[in-house]
Amino acid sequence: MMLLRVMLLRVMLLRVMLLHVMLLHVMLLRVMLLRVMLLHVMLLHVMLLHVMLLHVMLLHV
Image (cartoon, rainbow, N blue to C red; front, side, top):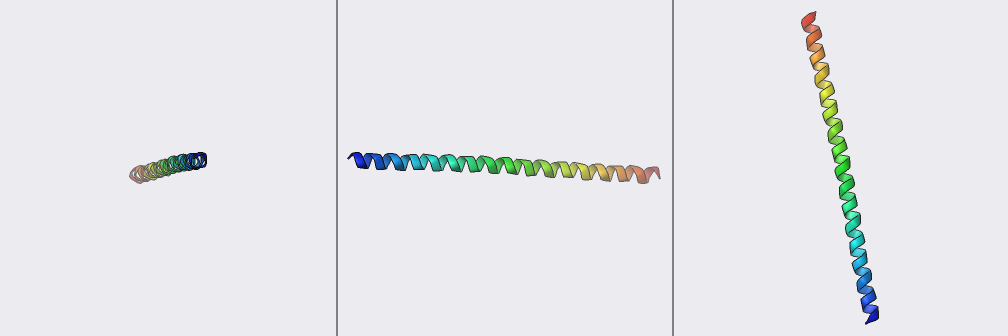
């Protein structure tokens, strides 16, 4: 009986550990995705600024 209990406890602990690891991975992936999204938004803004500047320069010339 004791052996069975210990085995069950170990399995439960392993499952909890796996769940935690999965959650950590999901969190990390989310953070990475957010960073990539922010980078893309920044790049888009820079591109738009450049286009605006080009338009202004062309208009002035």
